[in-house]
Image 1 (cartoon, helix red, strand yellow):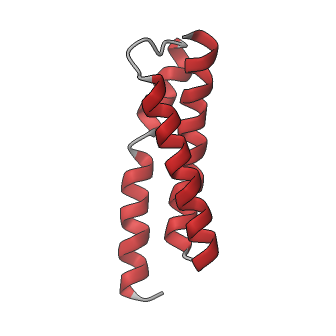
Image 2 (image 1 turned 180 degrees about the horizontal axis):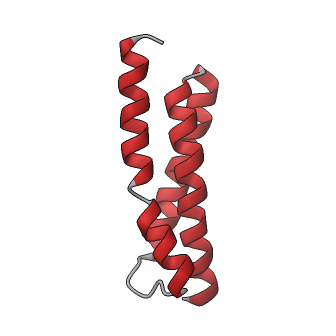
Image 3 (image 1 turned 90 degrees about the vertical axis):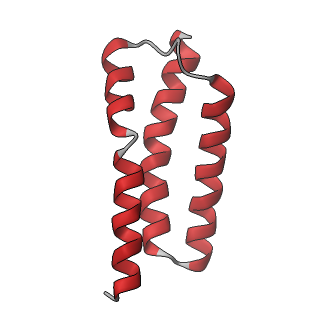
Length: 84
């Protein structure tokens, strides 16, 4: 892999892993009262669009990061919709 791809993968890892603590906390507590529903919807939509864009241009860091982050964000969104 070239250095640019490695930088992209490192950045993708950092920004993706940042959502993990919130997803775990939401999963365990089932509490989302302090999370904004509009923010979660816009975030999930943006992640889906980045994923589509990454797939179109075949960019591995974009695809990897946005796939995982989309799953985490949608998990949090699911709990927000289910438990308020």
